[in-house]
Image (cartoon, rainbow, N blue to C red; front, side, top):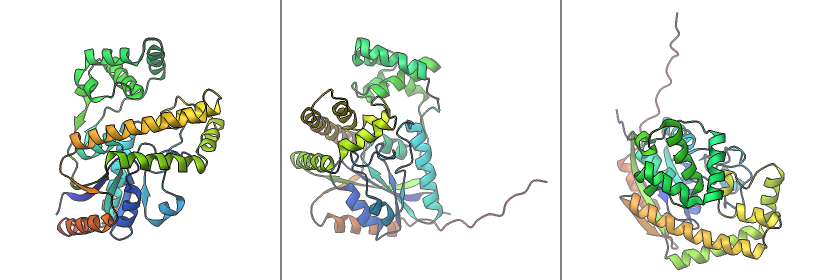
Length: 324
């Protein structure tokens, strides 16, 4: 019996066109979409994440979209458990998962079989580290992490306070470096990695246009509703670019023009980080420029690959084993 099930990963920077291509493929092939985007998990955060529309979500099966309350953080460990369940369920139906997203760490963790420690959060410790970052600066936390776990410190963006706090939390609760606790178990998948790309300046123009479009659709009002529903700008869900900045506009702490300028700057930084991650951490990616007609090119590649790597037949349901 075949042991390695087929799986396709569609990756690339934000605004490059992954959603449209994934829908095109999933409507024509036996695929189901599994989101690999930490922003799409949260209900009510639709406009600012450029989430697929309700119509798009009905067109083909989607997994891990609108599964979390934005007031309840999801760790990477929780995401990985849910994603693996979704992938297993798709395979059990004789279909093929199509991973789609730009959260490089989540995608790498899935494909490499990371097994992060299932350590529950310690709210008091996190609050103390948060206050320390405000008092001494984020750099102080990164320097401490570099002393206790240089490998983990190199992996984490020094500006990513949430991940720095999590790494130091693990160290302080266990006495062990986070990198020592991270295990890997190679998943039983045969993977085709497809990447979409565009020249940087063209991508920046797309991002600027998308920001304007999201504002016209009511992004600021969406943020206002989330705040009125009890969401705090300090929540991990609000780390999605734009939400914390627009929360400051709602609070009267800055102008909309200032917030939009920062959103544009942070989006450009994010695109550069995505590029570096995908090109340094992802091997054997088949890259395509997101030009008119790319759908048919990718379709031909995926269809041919699936002919060589067909999914196993769905398993017959087993009779329950009753205990005497």
